[in-house]
Amino acid sequence: MQAQILKGDLLNEAHLKVTTETIKEITPFGIRLEANLAGDVVGPTYSGRDATTLSFFLRTDGTFDWEGKAIDTTKEGDMIIATSYGTGRMAGPTTSKSEGETIFATQSPKLSWLNNKKCRLEGTGDMVTGDTHVKVIAL
Image (cartoon, rainbow, N blue to C red):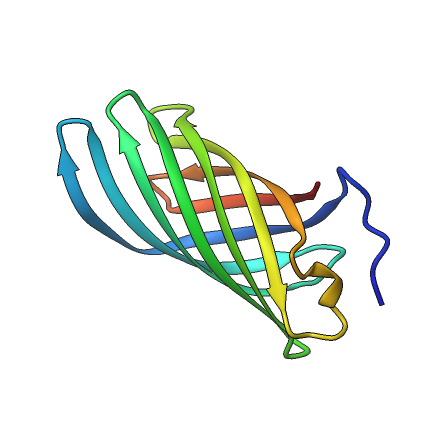
């Protein structure tokens, strides 16, 4: 059964913490990084645990491009995967703001309406604490 989700509706929010970071490459133009994050996803669509891997290219001007892969698992045993991409910028000395799009896939009959659903992502992060907050909004 498909939930009644309209454009602009909040599907869920993720509260994540960086668990590992790897510097992949340093160039005169910027740094290529990879980060693994884990935390909780909560919302009207589903709630559960999230594991995400993000790849960044952080330019010397403070802007960045990113790509992500995530697995969400609910308490009921449903698994949702997401692939995403976007852009961002440093918003302060240690904080960042980002935006992008994600697309979902699942084998869960209950959440099958999410398959191929595109959503907007809005995120903030703190490079010192490793805390990340992401809102997932229906397109």
